Image 1 (cartoon, rainbow, N blue to C red):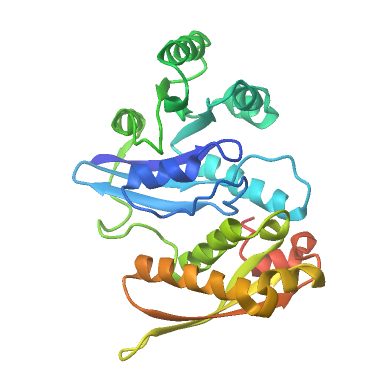
Image 2 (spheres, rainbow, N blue to C red):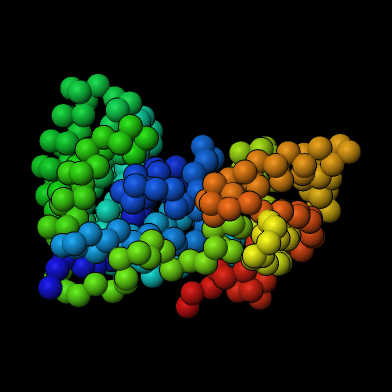
Length: 299
């Protein structure tokens, strides 16, 4: 019998959940970009050691729904909270405005008020403020008596991650391991390849375009001889977005393919041939059937 359980990482968009997950796991699993709302589905990451196994659930940022897609993203958060043994609420302390947004979030207030499970408040990006301000914030949140622990961290600077990990282990129930030690996630290689391509779209394109796209892996063929073959469809919701993705003389999609292929090869640790196509599905973010086919419906 060891410490085993599920840990939900929750917070507002851009609070650093995915960076923190990657830091806790010691490897990149969740895609990370400077833009908010990059994560759309919960991503399961497994950390196994001799005396514990933690199943982390990286969740989308808590948003006020503007699309049916947003509602589905919130479902991923709700289910992760239901599944969790411990909740880690991640708050961005890099500015007063971001901290206030977290404190005033109705969803966050609801989670705290119901408090059915241990909650750790993780004050993330603590390296961006002074030591005096850091100490002041820690004392403030401890005085509220709402959390089982208040821990300052920095995912980017890899600061105080061990303290957070130790507190999580302390709060977890005992049990038997749920996964073999060599498994890091339940997700398939196809899923991570599609996420890597999405990450590059967020990095390379501006405005609304990244938020209007989805990536579907149409073919994934592993080959004993030669490179693996991957064919991916970039879904857009308006005809006017297709030429933006493709670019003049196909230069934009070529750059996307080159950068995505390099990251995919780093992740898979083998060479791939990547083929990208752009496909129009009008208003896909509002279509229940389409969202279900894209894997957004959990209930």
